[in-house]
Length: 456
Image (cartoon, rainbow, N blue to C red; front, side, top):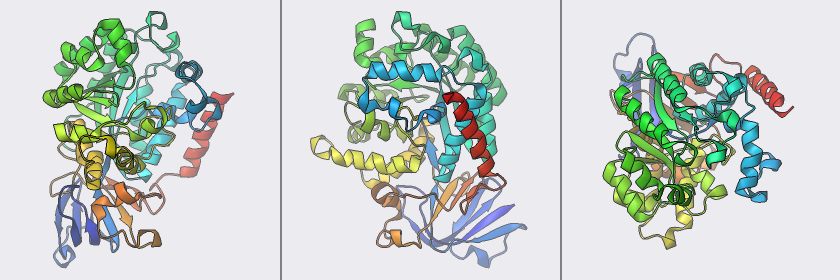
């Protein structure tokens, strides 16, 4: 089966390419077969559904490169408000909650996060799952793949871990600790069971030890060995306040510490990086190491604003991430595109380099994200590319006066509602306010009941 999106008002094939006006898009199977004017005038493959896209702006699907789905169950809680607690007080309150999560709660939290992502145009999601309480069993990531299959979203699982005990300087309760050997064994199992490196792959696995301050060094060096043996990517948290701690502990700030052990390169990306100094950003550019910029946590917990203009000037690969609800109470990557641009405008006068054009921030969430995840088949719209896209019907009052520049609409104006359609691999997964084939009310009731069990 395929689709013809007929008479699209605008097709943004890439944030850096000219916008196509009043054209059609033909989708056959998983891929885009053609883009052009009046495609409906010619013969179409049997079974093609014609969709009237008049007034639609069509975009490449958003690619989320950093998240913690399990944290969805601690959103909007006054007792966990960062503004009323010190970091130590906050950690002492939130980690005991995390350590109580069950397998069912991990699954339902993933359902909640993925639903919000899909509704707002995300077609590929990476989750950094680093919380493995002993009582929750060994199938937490398996259940995340199950949740992703439910919605038909492309899912990259970051199998994380924490191995350093609190008694040796970490912030992690013993209930959440793993051994390096146990972590590696499960990573190998997940790779062998789920990882698909082929074109249009829906499932991939990355090795993602949580952060250097909460893991033994061997956890990182052995992750590096296994990942490169298996041909998978590497990910961790960097530059969110831990560099002085690591400097005192090892004599190295985080970027140098990781680069010296080899945990850097084109197959590695870091999350956050707001505290990095200019020479450290230059090292990321030199090694090809990428950055998942999570703008919304910067508002809440960042001591300084991530220097995206400097990264752009140096050629650092940049993607966007929503991050988890411990520091962002939504899973809306489209909102993050707007936040990322506005945040840089806020501090523009203090920067050496100018803020990139608004469309560049859409690029970080599409092609930039695809680059971080090692994907050449997603991130832009073109013949032969995966049919990952979303559409916004702009025939609404809130879009009057904004329609002349579709590539800048999301970063500069912001889109406050769910999109009209999301498609992944040529399959419509969200359309006209509903998930085809799913009962959102039933999913809500199950997730809400699971949340109540956590709070009792």
